[in-house]
Image 1 (cartoon, rainbow, N blue to C red):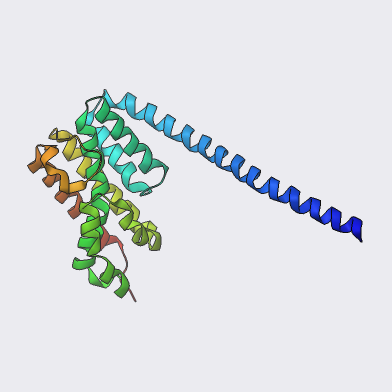
Image 2: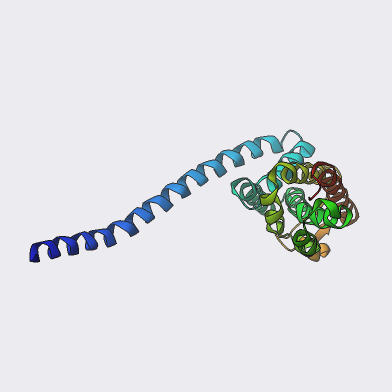
Length: 215
């Protein structure tokens, strides 16, 4: 009996040592994987930056909307912040307008196409105007999670359009966050606002057309 107790105690001690070690190794492995993804994306984006600004805007803003806070979104954002350090303020402008578009589009769609959203979604929808204007893309996540097949493509197309317009008109911004509330540091602010409005309208209309009516 005493031997069994000692064995159980040893196993418990070993488990206590093993679990943190396993967790540490798992976290390190995940960081390596995500780091590799981000490095590859950054290399591809850097090579593209020298060829076509409009295409770069399309790609970056599509990435901002495709997973809304995931690896692609973060890679695009990191690329934008690095561009600020290099003095390329147009890239950060495109990245941010792409992140602002999905929440704003969902808010607008929930007002225009009420029969496509549940009661809870209609009540929560307008809040996304504030989140979108503040560059909090994650406000769109609950809507995307409930209907990814229709929401994600709509948001990607609108965001990509916004990024392309921002790049085409050489809009710039020197702040990596703040959304519409840091307009004093936005270059060509009028066309930047146009980019946001056009992207929002495109996504909202697509949402209204693609989403099915709520039973």
